[in-house]
Length: 346
Image (cartoon, rainbow, N blue to C red):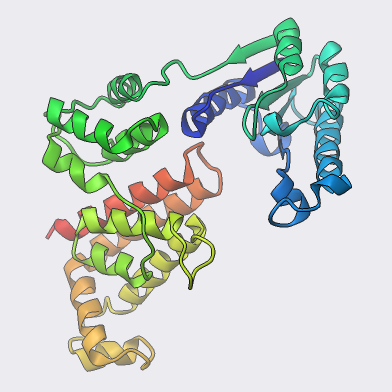
């Protein structure tokens, strides 16, 4: 099988299918050598912001150029691997006028290349799906309704939710089945004795959006307030405001947490006993009152807790950079939930 099409309206569920497929195709091959990913640019991306200028052909030129890169990669024999896996995302952006070269390749694909086309960006050209069916397979999420996704995701994760907890998740997610998957993935990271998870335990993970300052995140974690910390994280990663035109990238949020715990590490010293000494250890720019809270947190965590925190941070850094096929927001939600759990183990 040399060509694959991954469909699905929900990007989270679609990406789950894609991640599984890529893992199967790569097997034990070196990902850095065998895998190449290309994204078909949207009009806004292609012309620098609002899509203006698309009529000049610049957007079409950018899409055609990206498609040419993908086809060239597909026609290139593998290097130091048995095969190449070429992933092309947002193929729904390819217009009827631009699809010709792709259809020509699909008519005679290279047998050492696994070409994976991923829907998204717009309505998929029917000729693409027809061509894929002749030389490959079409994949889609097994479950797309929120209730079905909840049942499948909890079963896969080995979780049991009470009826009230399940209803709370579905009421919060509405028609966004992908959100259900994200919530269950986060819940699966929390320590459990196998008993059903009730609504009171689920509610903290049903977050809303809104712009907040970054220190609200570290303050909530310091208090072990999982509900507030996840709500703050969600706002940082998704909300914008007059002062923040763009939402924070997950790596930026991670950097905030790394910086915070590095400061705590500097206070992990039995000689530092007073707020004044803590402020001095932090460089003298922090007032003693603020340093007092940092010192108390460092003392609560202790060497073992700080070591565990840095293990969580390091794993999140690797996952955000592609070690495992986990959505970035789930990586960060898992990290924050674990850091809060550390604060609650006093």
